[in-house]
Amino acid sequence: MEGRYPDRIDSEAANLVAFLLRHTRTNSERLRLNSVITKWLGERLELIDNTKLEKMKGISAHILKGTDPTLRTSVALANTGYGVSQVLPIIVAKAFSNKGAILIEQPELHLHPKAQAEIAELLLEMAEEGHQLFIETHSEHLILRLRSLVAQKKSPLPPDEIKLFHVNKKKDGSTLDEVSITETGDLEGWPEGFFSASSEDISAILRAKMSVKK
Image 1: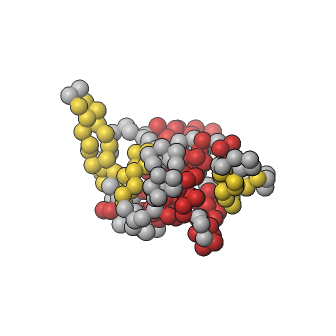
Image 2: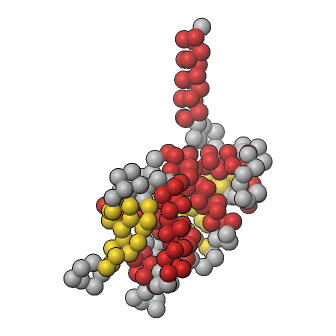
């Protein structure tokens, strides 16, 4: 079955439709997929609802379609923007992949800040279910949500099970520097000045507001 109907999603998610054809043969499997899609792509990320596979007329091929949550019209996922195609393989892996290691590259690509933050909660839920995740990210919003959940005691994982590493580039090579999230959501070992622009801009806005009030 590995050839035509693979049992795992490849690194580029090019075989996603074939993977889904294998894993949505029964009604219960289709309901499982729709439930996960509705929760994450629909309710949480507000990108797409009710994803399903449809056979294309006249040819031996299938297409992924869903419902635009704003327009309430049926759309092909290939036409909904790159953000959906970036997140969908992660959600499908959550629904059907065996518990084990999953490598994810920049899940935040082409997503707005709120959606990037929601991705953090999706990843935490997957980790709680038994997936071991290795994630490359440049998203301040994703990391900030992780910190916020830890600080509020809402993270399903304790802070010592959430490992952050900063790639420190040097002339003679690169090193991985571990960064810890404390129980209060602070970062220990984070490079000075990294991800500081947003905080500085917010502080500048608040100072400007205070000066106007005076």
